[in-house]
Length: 173
Image 1 (cartoon, rainbow, N blue to C red):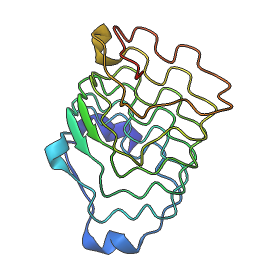
Image 2 (image 1 turned 180 degrees about the horizontal axis):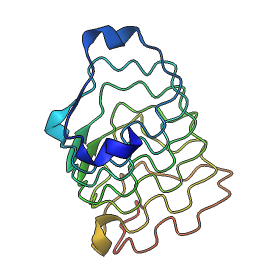
Image 3 (image 1 turned 60 degrees about the horizontal axis):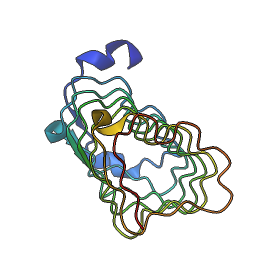
Image 4 (image 1 turned 30 degrees about the vertical axis):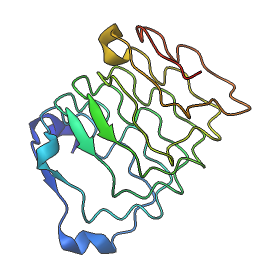
């Protein structure tokens, strides 16, 4: 649907979709710049076997709020560009995310307006070695706060531009 992505305004996965067991959600909604969070129904999206969520919502520039609380991310290894260029995105529910196996978070929130990463206890950077541009240009340069339990994992090999143009970033003590 790359050719028509810009004209898609809603996504609803029917009940029969629960039987589908994708191993990748790479670029599933990429470029759907007219998609509204109120018109996304992922209730029947079974992500139990998904390892790749890279670019999943990349370029969904109309999204302001997104609730992904029902997604199973326990096997995901790449979240690169997952919300990149979601230029209106200010809030995303990732509290249920289990990121223990994620090794690539490059540009995950790049060019979003997120002002606070409220991620709950399961969303922790544990194994990611690649975090280049992860929070680049978030909040339009206005700054944001990281949660108190935010800590970089041992072995991070690339933080190039990770917080570039992030404004007044408040790191936990």
